[in-house]
Length: 319
Image (cartoon, rainbow, N blue to C red; front, side, top):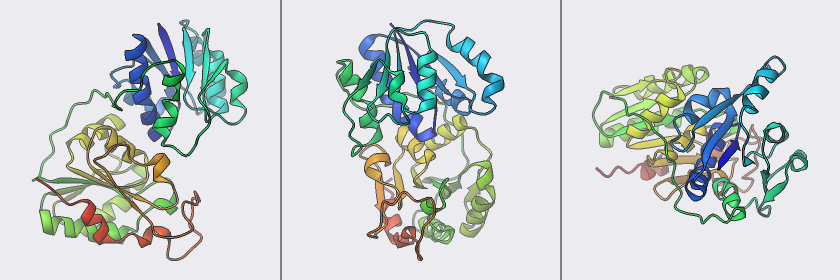
């Protein structure tokens, strides 16, 4: 059986789909191809259960549409499964050569018009991973343990253990814990456990990350903007702890099994928190959350209600 997966973005969403893809391959003894935005092609090519990755040209779509469709329609599939549920992913689903077109229960933007089947009943009060796994029930595949099979090599990093990775920047300003709190938490972590801290982020985060690294001081290194997603995955797999806002790298850390302390304010960890029992979620203590606003309307912000001591308790290192 040949199955085409459509899950275009973002980093966290792509990782949320991986356990379902694994069980589809195992349960149906299937070959799996995956359509994803080009910035994630290299990472998805390291997913153990994926045979072929097709890059979706989100930017400059008009000039790239014809070669994309040619590659997409190169092979026929027994089924194409849209795990995104948006109009653009439904377009890809409809364009593929497949006898069955299955969409998710959380479809929107009119995408359901492009499906021959919808998997499960809409229930948004669950984690995104559990919602995506509705397709297993739809195809009568037994749900198994959630796993994230990724083939990644671990880099050699200099410094004494324990290693702590800090991700201080997310795409929403309202999700960000104050930089001064990261600095204080980092200093106190090193005072208590010694070890080394790596501050990580995208190229646009480099200034903030370097400021935090400088503020923490000795045994702290900023690698912001210096790693690919594949390299970042390997780095996270070598860490002893991760401290992060709600972000894509938070899900990447959870996927490789590194204990993660995740800070949540405007978003709901029941739906998008780090998946697994070895992670700790620290939630802002205000009545107005989760508001899902990209900028906070209040001062102090909800994220400022999360204390440094609570973070240190969550990072309690057990050698």
